[in-house]
Image 1 (cartoon, rainbow, N blue to C red):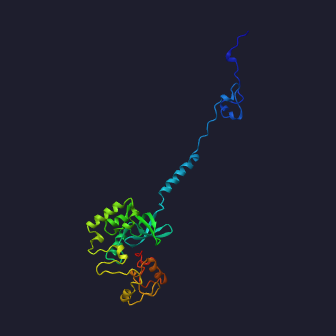
Image 2: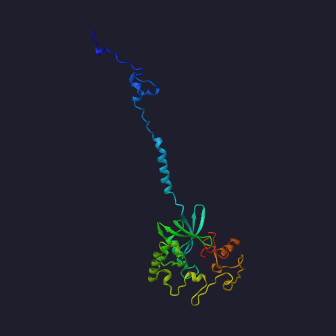
Image 3: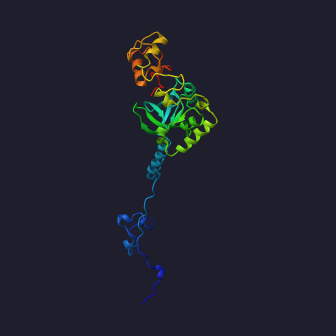
Length: 282
């Protein structure tokens, strides 16, 4: 038998070029003697940046939502007295009765000073956060007001500009000890309202309880005589035409009815011209 030079043996020719075999496997083009099972599977397609972008977009949206103005954020519109403000929250204008505190009424000796102090703490346009406690019988939102993370309600107590309203102190159950301690300190230092010798607490004032010669009407009907003598006009219930003071009314709603009846406001019930009469009244 003739010797055969192995180098002369022709190798099997593939039906597709070796360089293209990997790319054309899916078309069924293989080299002889190589089983389909032994071929490497096609790699997973590389994920493009657009594949992962929805995840990043979702995270970005979440981050944006977290930095948006919180739902309980508001902007101060006006200050009624030492414990009542009005705020703008979205499209709504809301009256806030500050919880856990009670400031003197504006007809009392320290009442206007308390209101002025609150205006200094909460100027018009000030951004605040609200911890809503309740809605009272007058439709006001009862809340603790925060400025830059600090309770303005508590600050009013610390400054002696208001007293702790113990009847409603459950609205500050977690911090009531701070309120009571702040009031004790203000009393000892005779700050604000506590500097008075004949102090009448605001809740007693509203009930018509007076000390010494101090007296104040608790309703329009009981005060008609004094108003008549002082102004020479005769109040006519809740109708326009009389010369009224805010002390002639038992509630803000009664004063508002007079203002609504005569928006020219001859009695000056709307002192700050914001459309709300006698904002210091409950």
